[in-house]
Length: 300
Image (cartoon, rainbow, N blue to C red):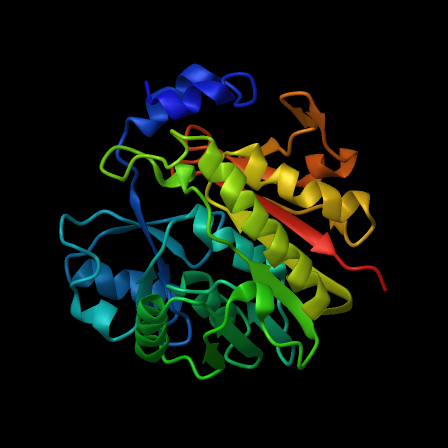
């Protein structure tokens, strides 16, 4: 058993099935880039080239990669026909529900899977500011954006908690640095929260990022907050003061996969009741990475 996960025994449904799932290598998923090629044409072309794909009914652009070949090494990948992306990682961009013509911000955007999906969903007709503090990761983001034929992304490099307040955004995607427990499965790195103090340190950064994101958001605008960790310190505990103080309200979200609601309490701490509107995704419920997703609305 992974020691870091034992502390979640009481909050993860069917905990024994969860422990079995993290010991299984996850499937690889890709997202067809419909800016380059239509989904069915893509599937047929890939099958003809010897790359079988299994469609994911819940997300039209998603396919499970079933070839033994590395999905990042094909000609079609370099032509920008698809992006390799975790299935649950596609959900935050979908939940943001961005529209053409809007000003959007991905505050911690690199390496770019979510930002490039936002560009695809808005057909290159929104203005998307993709920000990240890491010079190396920004290089990866630019590479993906160019390969996928995206023209609606502007790349910036600021600390997210001090991003310039020069314009209000209609919608903001915030996927902050986290302990990444949800990416732990066989073949992946171990979780960082063997030391729970890591989550407490990250919580302070995450709260600063949420606070600043709301300042950058226009009244009535939307923030989607997501992490790939199970730690309540980095999820519900980050959002609780925001909601409790009336700086934002949680709104319902539609998740096309089985999931659990956000927590009402953790280790004696009570959270705002609306945090049950958030979604917790676990690998034994959907065969991908673990995720936490919440959608917030700023008061008018």
